[in-house]
Length: 88
Image 1 (cartoon, one colour):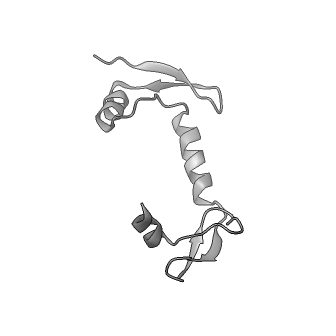
Image 2: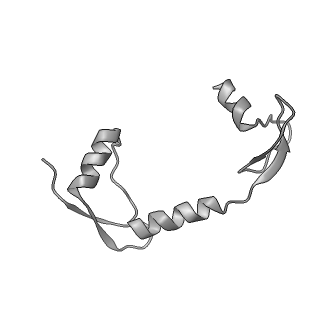
């Protein structure tokens, strides 16, 4: 059903193979889009996310000090992880 596909990385422009096994994994997880980046560029993006600047804030719900990966906007509430999950 699946065949290996050659795709082009949107970051570095190099070609990479989207293997049958990867396609089956994507289908199993319900992913509808093919990968746009090669493994090296995906790994580099993940590493950059891990080094993202964090901002210390006080949760507007429970008053606990926490860190968030964005600069809070004046007048908008900020929640800790637990309170944010409870709001969903």
